[in-house]
Image 1 (cartoon, rainbow, N blue to C red):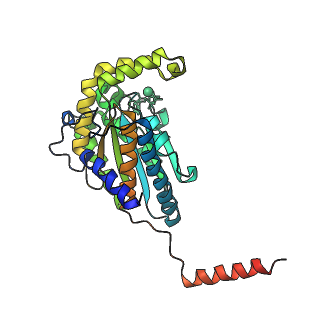
Image 2: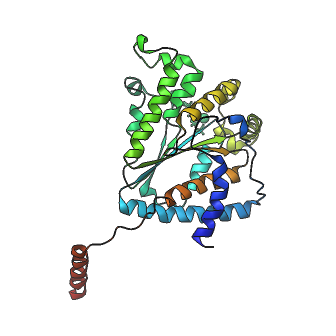
Image 3: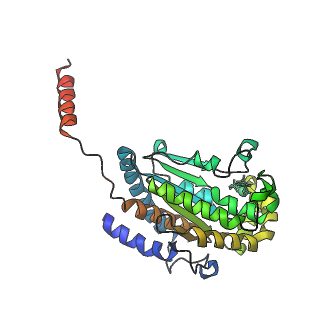
Length: 300
Ligand code: ATP
Ligand code: MG
């Protein structure tokens, strides 16, 4: 299939889930089980995904050669929504040298001794690279917002903590993203939207299947109690930070094959907009290449 045809097909699926304007965004308008009427068997979905990842690998090669743009992919979700699996599948074709995954867990004491953006800032991908944030600075307005005792550990001067703190943080995040995009960092943010029901099913599976036991964590079950608070925090985060230059994708996550396909499609589509090409070779470089060839040919 031609690239253009694949792109057209992919775009059709991506558009309904891309949020570029926060005003009026409501999470309840998005169904975690949505597959856009697609009923793919696993084989078909896998094939389309494979085409997408192959394409992404080609684009990444040019991204790296050009050394101008970088790509920051942010993944946020409730537990068991499929972040890890999605990252694994979508990035399966790309050259590991051009790609880095950062998983952000609870902050260290050193992290807490700095401003909240410090540890994330240090991992922003350099030009030519793809950086993946498996959880990100958004945790600072999600888990920290839902459990305010975490905020206390951040050692902020008390007079700087008011009821406006979350709006202030969200504004800081939006500005940070504006800054990065003006520096050539293309930002795509994925919220893997899993339903509470499907999460329970996946937790049960982790308990039932010995090979999945290691993935189970009792604290994840505890966190389910705060589901509504999380959904509200996600909604407010998306409302405050969705923009044309750093869009959110609210990806239905109850069907893994659809999640993976949509994320791959969104990335391919965004990278395609950059119109990447291998750097042109100028006259001086051509001369140097010809001289190198001549030297190699002279070798016995
Ligand atoms: P998995 O469970 O699939 O291995 P994970 O991303 O859930 O991946 P965990 O080690 O289970 O990784 O959890 C990391 C925890 O760290 C999450 O509960 C998350 O909310 C928490 N966390 C991340 N960033 C922060 C932060 N800035 N402040 C406090 N907690 C954070
Ligand atoms: Mg976890």
